[in-house]
Image (cartoon, rainbow, N blue to C red; front, side):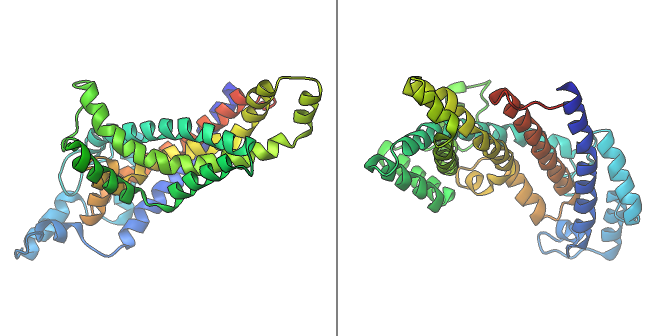
Length: 317
């Protein structure tokens, strides 16, 4: 297992290197100049000399090769440079907002798993019954309704019936755990509902396939209790595809909560990414893309390790 983890970690290097090369050079193809956007944001006139001086200060006067090598040297030393818009270190900007997005994604994933596993299991065990159709309606609703629309409905209902809205500014869990919970539970539930719809349907179809396997019929023929057959034999194997979806969806949520963060006024990583794109902040975009890439490859590695823990037949040699 240790050798497998070491090989997977080494395989990350060419993947992340490819992401770094594509991100850097594709950004330079996009029209727009961060210097002009920054200096002329208020519609004022700026002299060409001032624009050129700012380009020199940001290092944009160097060739693309020199800029790329400087950035790669910074990556290996965990120095992603300074934001072209705010001037602050990119790592500090990301770190100040990462906790918000990470907490929302983690809570949404936990909520989705607690909803999806029972719903998917019940829907598979009672296939074709009224209960199955009720679960289908719930899951199809989660797939069809946009998360931001559900989020706005939640806020309107809280305001209309509870005369309460979540706090505007972020509350740290270390300062006020209950205040943090009341603020983060609503966006997490909205995102978790959509996530659970995808997961429940996957568990249902996977469990139906597993229930038709020979070893399930053999266990039932040997007199093994139905509860044991379902929970220890069938569901355990049916969860393997779901584990993949959970890992990849969690990684996606780290950078995919843009609209939800806007609705609930969460100052997270998704909102930071949109601001960086609007301002043509190349260094910030590069740092965020590299962070997303690292999260994805680590999520894939963790999913593969969980496979071995769930299914003893799987061994990595």
